[in-house]
Length: 62
Image 1 (cartoon, rainbow, N blue to C red):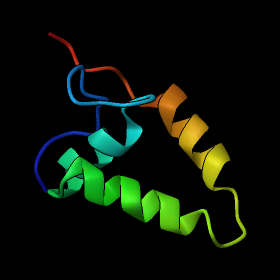
Image 2 (cartoon, rainbow, N blue to C red; image 1 turned 90 degrees about the vertical axis):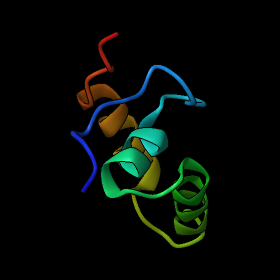
Image 3 (cartoon, rainbow, N blue to C red; image 1 turned 180 degrees about the vertical axis):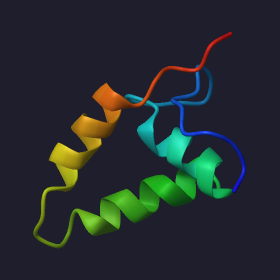
């Protein structure tokens, strides 16, 4: 595991959730984004989880 779970200030797209998760689990942001997009093909609350993480994850301090 790389670092704590925060939304980075650089290299993020919409909210930085996928970039933060990728940093935390030691993968690339594009891989995490692909995993999220593929997960959207199955029924479930993916968008609600994304929004909840966007709200709950702290932004990275400079």
